[in-house]
Amino acid sequence: MCLSGLGWMEWPDRYLATLPLYGFDAIHCSIYRNPNNAPGAEPYWSDADIRRHEPGAMKHLLRRTARFGIDFYAPILYQ
Image (cartoon, rainbow, N blue to C red; front, side, top):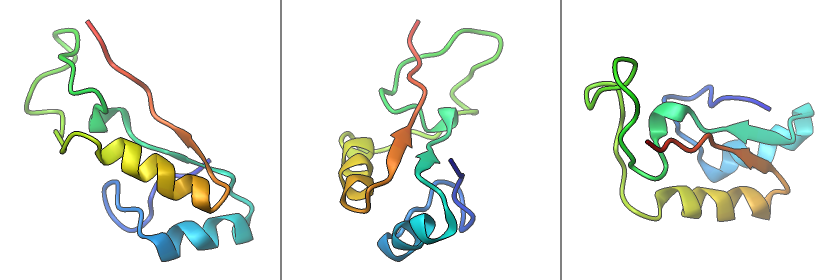
């Protein structure tokens, strides 16, 4: 499993295609991506700490990783 080495949660298709060549079989989408946009528990979580995204962005990334045979790990937050 790896994190993106290009920037915070940047996963271009060309990068995803090369990961299996180097032995990676999964990517880790940071908990700070907050895929379901749920509020987290205080005091460890605040709106300043998370990065919101468009609905469906994680689903789109999941479909793209599947095309390259890469698994996907994203912790889900809920309160």
